[in-house]
Length: 186
Image 1 (cartoon, helix red, strand yellow):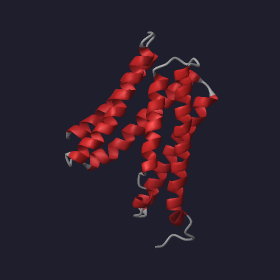
Image 2 (cartoon, helix red, strand yellow):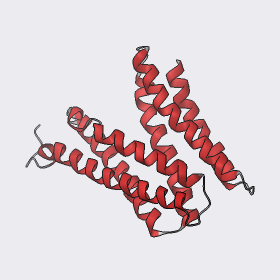
Image 3 (cartoon, helix red, strand yellow):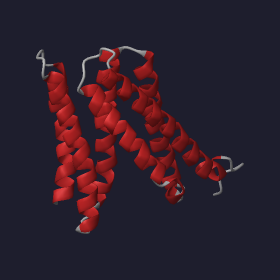
């Protein structure tokens, strides 16, 4: 266990804390939940930076890091969909969560074929993640009333959903030669 892996484990451990803060019946609960989510987002960047800088990448970290990210984002989207109950949030949330399922399944299948490198993370994913994380921090920190901040959060989440779809299309196109082969070779 090293510091980058501990930060990843911390991110998973913050999920129940995030949920608890979000549902507390206090005026500051939205800001507290947003702060916990922001802390998790920062640890996501920081653990990757430290693992590369200190050359402490491990198989455990390589497995848990993307799982921790997807869990935190999915939980945040689910609580926001419940709280906001609007198409402007629900549709992007469904796109983002659906894409994660599709791409995760695609990566797993490609790994079985020994072609996982064909569906590696792209730079587009970094832009998507930035828009998504900023949108979620904004939306989590504000009650579900249409304000300038909430509107900005919706716009950023819609942008993130668009980038999400685009990156999914890129992954599928990269994997298409393997998906479209007429017969499995034995």
